[in-house]
Structure formats: C-alpha cells, structure tokens
Image (tube, rainbow, N blue to C red):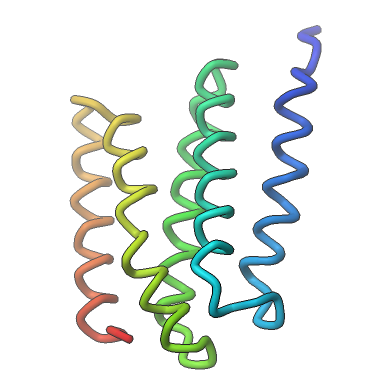
Length: 127
C-alpha cells in the first residue's frame, strides 16, 4: 500500500478552505486576492498531484477550477468587480490544462471545448 503524501493531504485541506472562501459571497468578494489565493492553491495542488502520478485527479481539479470561475462569472448575484476579476484570471487553469495535455489528441478537443465555453460565457455574461 502506498503511503499518502502528507504535503498532498495538507495542500488538499488548504485548497478546500480556500475554495469555500471563494464560493462564499460573504468572504470579501471584491478582493482579487481571494481569487488569486484560490488559483495559486489549486495550481500548487495540481503540481503536487502531477508529481505523485495522479494525473486523473490533476485533470479533474483543473477542470473544477475552470468551472468554478465560469460559474462565478455567470452569477448575477456576485459583484461586478468579482466577476470581472474571475474573467481576467480564467486563462490560468487553461494554461495549466494546456501543459497537462501537451499533444494528446483528446486533450486538444477538450481544450477547444473549454475555449468555446470561455468565449460563450464572456460574450453573454460579460460583467
């Protein structure tokens, strides 16, 4: 049985709390620092997952972060500045996914779909 990486478990807990703060509308939603902390924690965890050979979890995490940002952009109950900051930072999980997929054919199709979703959301829900 493979021993769990303590850094991995610790990072997962930190990301969980940061994501809760990001999802909460009462936790300083106008602060771009909140979005940056969430993205920094997620990308750090994605790197740890990659180093641990957990590519499926890495991919799922990056997709989840991308979708969290899309949902925040499309949420009319969020302040305009928060939605704009999310839109401005949407490239970060896309860059990580681009590195993740490299030249994989399925990855290129997935990336095209994500770019399409990003264009759709930015067009219809532009803050």
